[in-house]
Length: 161
Image (cartoon, rainbow, N blue to C red; front, side, top):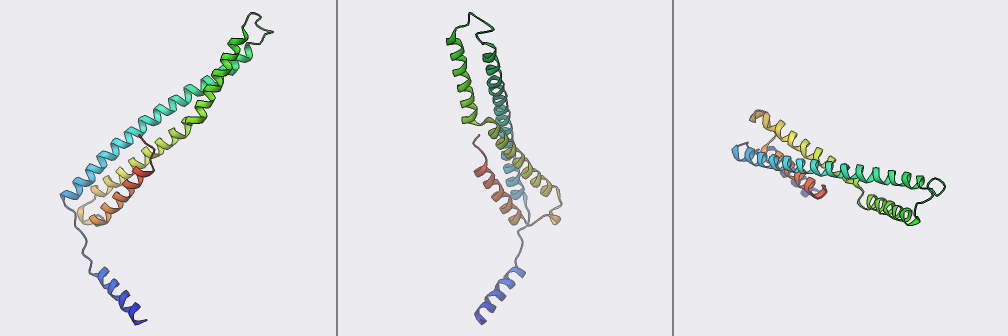
């Protein structure tokens, strides 16, 4: 039991005498370079989200309009329509619906939008910390480690650009 007490006492004494890493220009440059790359990634995710949203709208509208057209091509309404045209339109509808289900454009739009927001929020955290006076900031080693971990996590969980 004495061994555990002495171990906890030494760890407490180490924490009491720990010297915080002070801020200098290199730390700020590193954070600014990370922030610049994060803003680039956020812009790329924004562009991807816009592309997937447009694809979702295009494929969604076509997959809704074609069945309406086919239902209007009833033999009772138009007598000289060929059954091959109706078959072709039905195949086209199947391809459109398969494309929508396979690529899941709405989910990709959401994932890229969320990644963009997370990158921008991390950039805002960096800006807020750098805006403070050096005396009022979190210790630079702690803040750098926190930002690095969040940045690496974002790069890992974000969809590919």
